[in-house]
Length: 132
Image 1 (cartoon, helix red, strand yellow):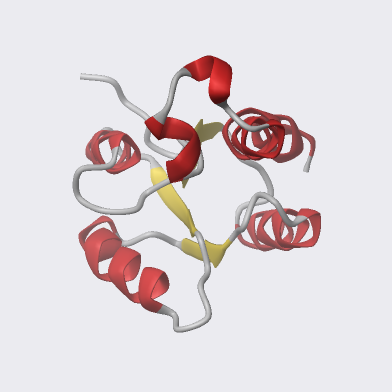
Image 2 (cartoon, rainbow, N blue to C red; image 1 turned 180 degrees about the vertical axis):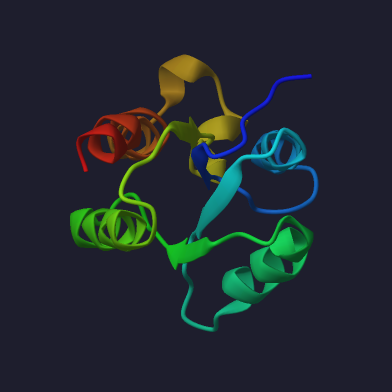
């Protein structure tokens, strides 16, 4: 069994109990890592409540909003991490998104804006998270 005692693991992308990020967070916790979780904020706070209830058994020491399309939210999340832990040892980037309309047709019919959104959230966000 992997021993991650004393390691700080920040997990992004937990949306529900079927999320790959959720399975990874459970294994990191089982291996002894300190768990931090980001969630996608929404106006009504539904996602925060849903993810908070799900991750409660993992006792995350960090639980912060982070919309990866907002550089200020990324920085704010990492400011919280810096305050609490001082460092991140493990970053789990488990984010992916594409507009529903762009998933229904052939790849060649993907809209330019839809492709840009998918690339920003699914890929470029890793660059921003690593640089924060």
